[in-house]
Length: 276
Image (cartoon, rainbow, N blue to C red; front, top):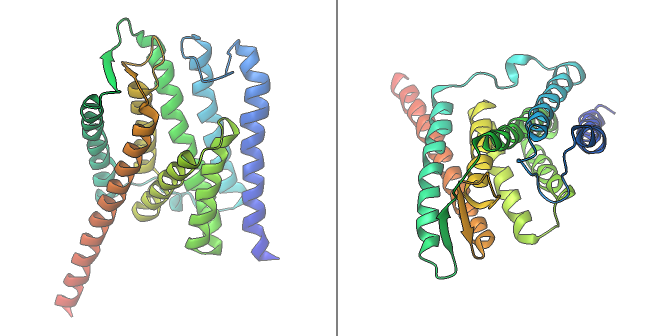
C-alpha cells in the first residue's frame, strides 16, 4: 500500500493544478478580469493580463509548497532553496549562453531567403511588463511544481521513474492549450529533461527557474510577433527554425551541466585518492 502513496499524491497534485488553472482561473477569474484567452494571451489587455500573470504563479507556487510540506511532509531544506557555486555557474553561464545563442539564431535565420527580421516600432513597455510577469512567472511555478514537488515526490520510486513520469506530465499538460504536434512534443520532452537534469544535479530550484523563465520571455520577445509587445518582428516559417534552435540549445546546455559536475566530481575524487 505504501508504494501507492507517491502516485496518489502525484495524481492529487495534478488534479489541483488542473482545477486551479482550468477551472478557477480560466472559467472564473479570466472573465472577471475582462481578459480574452481565445487564441494566445493578448498582453495589450492592460491591466487584466498583468494581474492574471502575477496571480497564477503565486497561487501555483503556494499549492506546490503546501503539498510538499503538509501532504508529503518533507523538510524545507530538501526542496532546493540554496544555491551552490556550481549551481550559480549553471544558472548564469546557461543564461549567458542563451543570450549569445539568440543573437546567432537571429543572424543565421536572417541569411535564409524566406526569413526577414525587423525592429518593431512603437513597442509599449507596459505591455512588455505584462508579458514578462506572465512568462517568467510561468517558468517559476512550473519549476516549483514539476521539479520541486512532482519530481521529488516520484523519486520514492527511484530516479528513472521520477524522470520519466514528471517529464511526460510536464510535456503533455502543454497540449491542453495547443494542438498536438510530434515536433512540438519532442521539443518539450527534451526541454523537460534538461530542466529536470538541472534540478537533479544542482539540487537547487533556482537555476531551472532562471533558465526556464528567461527562455520563455526572450523567446516571446523575439519570435511571438505580437504587435505592441514583441521587440522584433519576423516574417517566414520561423517556428520550424525555432524548434531546431531550441533543440540544439538545450542539448548544448545539458552538455554544459554534465561537464561542470563531471569535472568537479572527478577533482574531488582525485583529492580523496591523494589523501589516502
